[in-house]
Structure formats: C-alpha cells, structure tokens
Image (cartoon, rainbow, N blue to C red; front, side, top):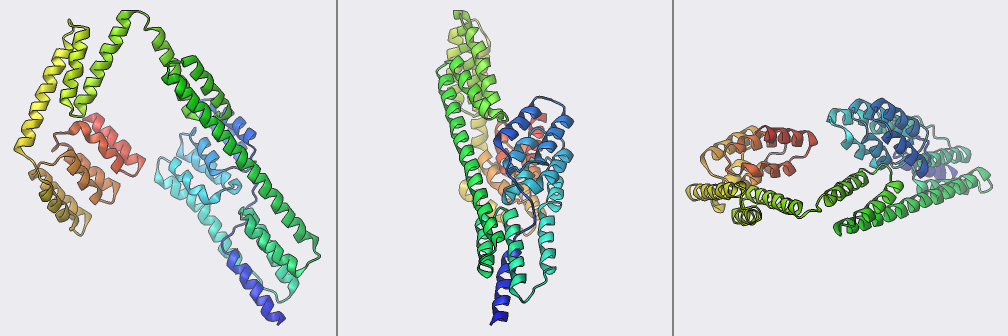
Length: 421
C-alpha cells in the first residue's frame, strides 16, 4: 500500500514538473521603472540608454511590456538581443515573452533570442526530469513536492504551487516549512494583485486625461489640452503618444496665433481646399476635387493654380473613363482567373500564371489586391505587387497593398519602391 501511494505521488509531481523551469523572480516597482525610462529618455546616446536599461532589468523583476518599452529606445538589434537575454530570468510573464520578438528589425535576432531564452529553459526543465531520483519513502516524496512547488513559484504559477505545498503538508502535517511556503505564496499573490490594480488605475487615469486633452484640443482650447497631456505624461513618462500630442497642440497653438488677420485666414482656407482637392484626385473622386478647386478659385480669383488643377482633374477623369471603356475584366471572368492561378501546385507556377494574365488583362486595384494573397510568402507577394504596378492605371493607390504584407521589412521595401516611382 505504501509503495503504491509513493509511486502515485511521484507520477503526480512529474506530470506537473515538465512545465516548469527554475527562475528566481520578483516584481519591479512602478516608480523604479518610471525612473529608469526617464533616465533613458534624457539622453540620445544609445550606449548610455542601454546601460540604464541593463542596470534595471538585471536587478528588478519586470514585465514583457516594460522590456518592450525599453527596447523602443534602442536602435541596434545586437543591443536589444543582449538586453533580452539579460532580462529574461527576471521577466514575470514569460508566457508573453514572444511579443519582444517584434522589436527586432531582422528576424534572425529574434530566433537567436529564442534559442538562448525560452528554448534553453525548456531544455533545462527536460534535463531536470531525467535527473530525478525517485525514492520510495515519504521524506523523499515530501522533498520532491517542495522542490516542485518552488519551481512552480519561480514560474509564477501560484495556485499550482500552493496545491503542491498542500500535498507536501499532507505528508508532514506538522512541518512548518510547507506552511511558511504557502503563506509566502499567498503574500506574493496579494502583492501582485496590488501591483496589477495600481497599474489598472494608472491606465484608467491616463486614458481619461488623454481623452479630456483631445476634447479640449478639438475645441481649440489648446492651453487646457496641453495641461491634460502634461498630467498624463507625468503618469507615463515613456509613452511617446503623449509627447506627440503635446507637440501637435503646441504647433496648433502657434498656427492659431498666426491667423489673426483676415488675409491669413483666407490663405489657410485656400491651402486647405487645394490639399483637399489633391486628396480627392488621389482617390479618383474627380467631381469632388473640381468642386473644391472652384471654391479655392473663388477665394483668390487671381491665382491660376486652381484652374490648372481643374483641367488636370478633368483630363485624368477622361483618361480613366477611356481606360475603363477599353479594357475591363468582369467579376465572373476574374473569378475563373483567380481559380486558374490558385490551382497551380507551386508558387513559381502561380507567379508565372499570374504574370501572364496581368499582361493580357485589365485589372482594377481591387482585383490586383485579390490576386496578392494567393502567395503565402511576403517575398512572393512583394514581387507580384511590383510587377502589377506597371500594368495598373491606379498606381496612386498602391500604398493600399502595404496591409497585405506581414513583415515590417517587406512593408518598408514596398514603401521605398513606391517612393522611387
């Protein structure tokens, strides 16, 4: 009977043991992290920023989000990698650590960080399992349970750790060590709950201040808006959106102060209408563009640019109408084309088939966007987008393809291609 009980307890422990690794964590205080971020923001020297971050994350428990905030101020993938490796043992929410991989410009650095943190931890846990020496007496089982509870605690699996400590306490009901560990875990849970509650309250207060600032700014109450934003900035010194809002508010304040004379106000309205016309033209809304250009010409009748823009809008409108009347691919035909491309076995064959149709047919921007997702790899999508560009009469809308790309690097390459065109 004793033997069966011993084996059962060991199996229970081992089944839980496989999901834990020995890390020693503690939570970083919010004030310490704010001070760290304030120090980082106080200098433009990346090495100094890196040293501030290393000093903090080597000594304080932190969250993945906090590590992401620090990485935002580092430009070198090498420095981000070194900081990630150093900070990993003290990260509280290791289950979310994969989010830090988005901070890298090159994916190879993210892979390297994974190999030296999360993967290494999993291998260590596996090796530990093979080193277990299962004893056939209560003392050995008790010690094993205590160790397992400690491992679960290091992984912040508090409820599971308490459960294991309670199992150990059932074996030795009078042992103060297990009781003390249970009390310790309960205290940690309360501390973490307090930290999370404080963070939640801070976020709510921050969001309320930002909202109030936006309301004031929309009503041209710039000074009140800046006051709200500065109060929000004091709560989250590392939040870049606050600085951008303050900058926007100050720019708007300067712009408003310069619109004292009526001539300046008329010029501002004229420029706005001209820009609005450009936006309408870029969206192929030619009638709306012509309307706002006419409004602009009414403000400054002597200006020739509105009339030039009206002629240009009419010309593009006619060219587009001619293009649509000459060459159109109907939806039924287009669906058959999509099926023909998608039915190809390999990506190279799909690419060749798609290019043949693009050469012979006339596709709208929406139809071209429907072809792109057939390719699973970003590099193939980008090649297809670049190829379609020369066959499109809506080249001004090719920025819309950016959302079809997965990685920042290929999105950036598309941006550079379009700028070059």
